[in-house]
Picture 1: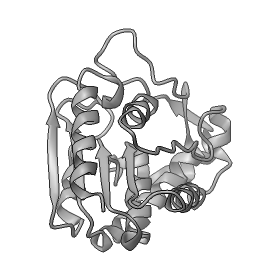
Picture 2: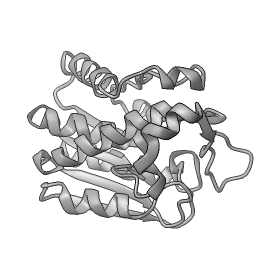
Picture 3: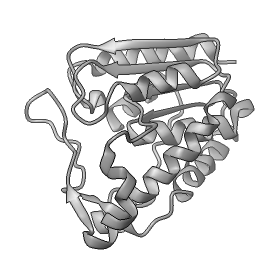
Length: 217
């Protein structure tokens, strides 16, 4: 998220990039958090931005997209718009039905990080997928999906046509179930899942800047 944040900050916008609980330390820590901590952190950041900004937009990538949607639904009247990159809103894989059993059998699964087309680039993600964290994520996504109709503010969604982490059904659900009348979907043809670090990053950054300019108060 940092390059995106730097781009917008250089254009004159106030930006906050919170570290969500369980992230940015070691993968075992993600097995210790509850899903409620993720939107709580984002909500606290929203309150801080409201103190100094006339308009607040919430952006998110992947799982962060779900967090963005959750906060956007809960505080719809307090935001001016949402921008998502390859957002996650459900886990269709059959094995997720047994995640509450799997988490007791194994603390981690193979990592799904660094799905980036551009060579030599890393997102510095965890080298394992924490199973208790995945169980919390599954609960979080089910709750958040039910909230999607509450979102009425402008929405921009970027979708990588070749994403090896999330199925396109995630983007399709978001576009179909969010109530916003102003909804835009932009296809990214030259990036994988972590598109903010990939070849289409500039497309994301500049289109999101224009989105802010159109919808700011």
